[in-house]
Image (cartoon, rainbow, N blue to C red; front, side, top):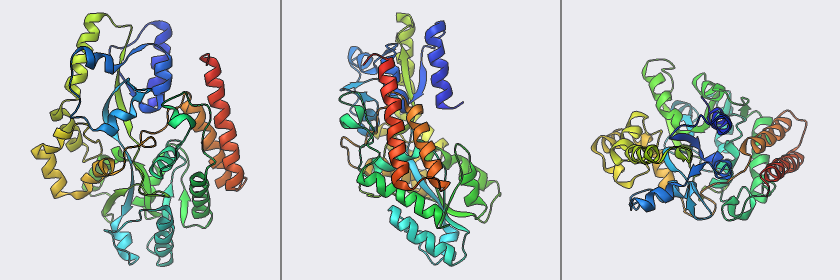
Length: 377
């Protein structure tokens, strides 16, 4: 079940009264869940319980903090990474231990790969509505106004910025030139493109790392030597945006059930549990507790296979500033649809990057305005 499905089921439960005692949601729905007035801030539970949170990775907590209040507990945290075939890099005469860190380097390496015949394309790019916020964030660019909507409700996107024009022009150029391939929306075709040597690289959430390693360990696609690298960006010095699952406490639950739910949330957040998630997913889920990183089994995995450490290292190595927590959008699905429609038009050749950005920002701003009107702000 997707996160939009989970959110729609929760929203239906607001009408029927059929709400769980603990709900798992993605950070994208932070504003909508707060606006529903149906959830208890995790911060209130922690304060009442004198629950110490100094052990938590601050980037994970910041992602779920709005106007200074922590609303949810990060749980199965992920980040976007570059996945690539090290054998293709070797065949192209590239150093597999030096993958591209910038979007311009992605173009350079893709050109080398295609010219050497190591792969048909350099990179496969899904038309994923969630990818752009990650690219903007890693490039150090706010996605919406009012400090990414975290100090005051977002009313406008900042898509059509200098960094935004760089990202959209890069995306258009690499696909139009044939150095990259567009694989469409919400599929695994970008991963299959790498497996089938249609492309040398792709971008996805770190939570696919475990499944990818599991498939390859079965002997399928034995020619692939998978590499994992930080997300390339226009400016790679930016911080990585947190995504993945988080835990919320609905207000409708009876006090005794709320208390039990809070105990369950604390249990799932314990260092032992967090380390187990990371080991079980080959580094795909990132531990939100610093002490979890000292777990012997986790340390052993990181030492034996440094690729599994890349997503966590990327999270910790970036700066912590007003950009890195990522945007808070009242209508993430509406904004995402606006972005995908414009991207699709651009990649089909119907819009140039300049006009695609104008359309995306216009339609995304309209989605935000309509949402804000509905909730009475």
